[in-house]
Image 1 (cartoon, rainbow, N blue to C red):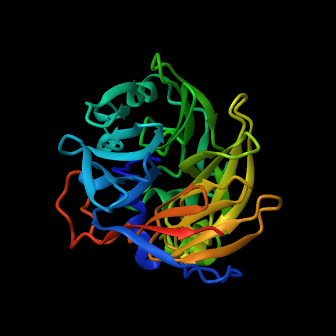
Image 2: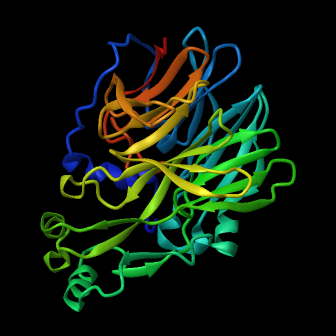
Image 3: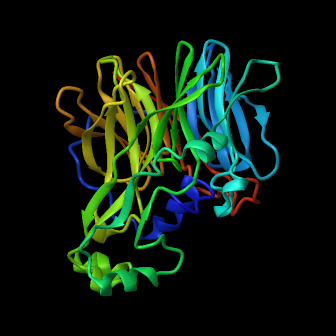
Length: 377
């Protein structure tokens, strides 16, 4: 996805016009408990040892740990202008991503690393993800934008939309490593700029492309085309970028990947988020469920049920393993990520309350992000 400082910096601008959350059947009312508050853009979390929880305060560039006594300690602080994301734990080691988004559109300024840190230690750099993007550009062969056969009037109108990508284009140099899943000696990285799932050898730092997510086509309605400022594009198909936001492994051995639609989330375009399943060995990718509003993070329970943080839907959804049927598990404000440990679900909420405008910036208001827990049973 081009011209992104961070994934949330783009979608937050659309929050005021995001569609109202759909009405799904609800689970029984769930109690929730606040473990930490006053956090700046808590977009990712992971369960640690001794009942601790790691949380990234992305725009502040801080990786924090919430201990069982609910004290919050900084584990790592990124350099000014950098953000942290995608924390994952294995034993006492925390893996995380450090990035500065798309380098404000300058490929040479791309910056993104997979790192690890142990309690009391210094951070180690495992892999340079931005350099991989500059060298390989996994989605270079994918076509985005309007399909062939689109009228010249539409293409001309679309080209005049401020700050929009070209009407028709292929995958550009862009890296925004956003989420990780670690198994044994392999880290799977969801790169929201590359639109790909990368596979990293933790010992050597070698990177390969496991899968490039497929474009997300949609036919623009007259209302959608008018909203976007290109009324002549009504009725034409547009292939949006499939921006991955999280990656986890299910008990069936497949990776589950949540994906935001690459474009504005406005009512006229509908709920276009999705969950893909990716084979961790072959990279085979298939759509599992779609029509989800802003799926920013997910977690998979031992029974295969998938829990999804719907950022603008203000709810955590539960998808039944066998058929993908959904219910509302918990109504919360702006959830960004979810994690499961045993019979407990952890989530970050109020994720967009008072974040600065980009990594390293000053807060726009009092930080109000929280980490909560709720019983799955």
